Amino acid sequence: MKQENKLLPGSLFCFLIGAAAWVMANYIPTVGKLIGGPVFAILLGMILAFWKRPSAMDAGITFCSKKILQYSIIFIGFGMNIRTVLATGGQSLAVMLCTIAASLLTAFLMGRVLKVPGNTATLIGVGTSICGGSAIAATAPVIEADDREVAYSISTIFLFNILAVFIFPALGRVFHMTDTGFGIWAGTAINDTSSVVAAGFTFSDAAGELATIVKLTRTLMIIPITLALTVHRTWKRKRQGTAAASNYSIVKIFPWFVLGFLLTAILNSTGWIPSAASSWLNELGKFGIMVAMAGIGLNTNLKSLVKNGVRPIALGLCCWFVVAVVSLVVQHLLHLV
Image 1 (cartoon, helix red, strand yellow):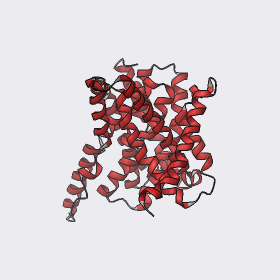
Image 2 (spheres, rainbow, N blue to C red):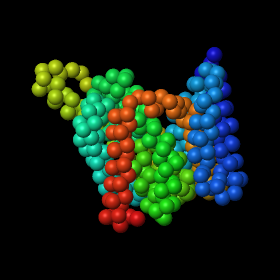
Image 3 (cartoon, rainbow, N blue to C red):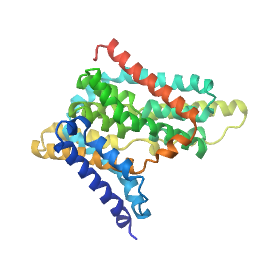
Image 4 (cartoon, one colour):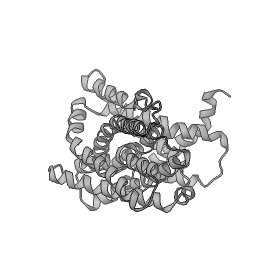
């Protein structure tokens, strides 16, 4: 079977769920706008995940949850101005650096208190502070984590990604946050890009666009963090007399879709693209987010998320809480909220 045919069944299923979520968000009075399309999509996906679906759908569902998400973020760039993107990235840098440092320090200290293995604690800390599963996948070969440690870490991070989509927009409204405040908070405190985008656009379109910019800036921190871990690992091995070849590769870990997002933002800023066309492409990107959320929901196994151990989950909760609080405190000190 050709690759395109393998992707079709699962992709079509995600598209239908995304379309249903779009209808619910736009046509259910009051509640639809309050909950938002991305949340509807992930909820529908999680419910349908209990259905034993044909294995032929798996490839397409995974494609939607990974690739369609990245393509959608690129399309969202058509609604951005590059000057705003650069200004927002710079504005949130201090908040971002503080949350990353807080998460890594919490993972180190609480990992010891909870007796979570070193590699697992490192992966949870990196996943919480930078970009969830992508950061874990990039860091794992650098610190030579085994499959079990990676599985524990990704399951823990994914659990809090799902919770964030529901909890953060609700808290944002309870705290009466502005679009700017919530966008920076979501972009710096939620783990994975998918959940940041979903939570941001659930709160408002303006908050979603801002959260996306902040999160993509934060994603680039994969490079210095993994490079630092490589240097530390190599130094440690040399001290022990067991130095080995490094597994670090900047080409493999670089989030290339971020460049696509910047390119579409630049194109939109030139004025070459008619406003009607850029608006349509931007809306297409937002719909793509719903399709991607459907894929993520369909790939969620709630039972496996909680059976992987209480200690990694407890550590993930500590890191998540600290990052959320530090982000709000630093924003307040810098008068960003």
